[in-house]
Image (tube, rainbow, N blue to C red; front, side):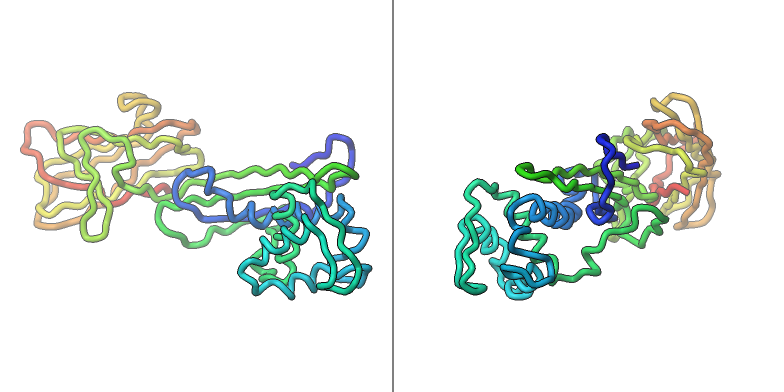
Length: 303
């Protein structure tokens, strides 16, 4: 919830909410797209706090050119942003008539970039740049397995005479329901490999585990594992989910019985009912006294 400490009002047009589907936990890359658009919001606020508002308006006639006309004139230029930044800083006349635009030698590169992005956004694809509502429901779209849903919101204040607007932002990452079985996972007696375009995890000992770090099981009913083999294993495997350590409290379990026939696949649901934040460990243990058969986990998904 957004609050203004001095009791001022919130301009909802300065709130920007976006959703992205991103791979990995790179916080630098997490909201670059959002920052690009929210920079335009900051740029608009900058034009209202500086002397720009004396001569320019967004779409109405004024002493100088309106920002929409500027945006339409330069939107196809590859160097449009750097050109506008230079004009803002150095000023000039003759492009839009005889009225001289004053120079702004003290403006920073970041401030001129934000103003330039705001101006260029006016003649751009408005559908792509529109903020999501500040309240409502998000229905996740189909995305690549393992991608996170990242919700980012920012607010830019109006600034004040002689001070630049300030922007605050916050991102929340919702992990994918699909676990990528890659070498990035911390494991014991399990080997990640790719086969036929599929990531899988070989069980290459009588027991072992993989760690689910940075993963919460709040609201998760079950972890569904997919096990596969080329030759049917003649022994059973016990799978468990442990909390905090590989031998910690058991919060989910399932058994895959011995199989018959040749190549095959089996789905296992490890039901959970926990509310902790982990970490969690998925362990396996082969039936004792029988020769180990080669099997692999080919999928893992929260439900």
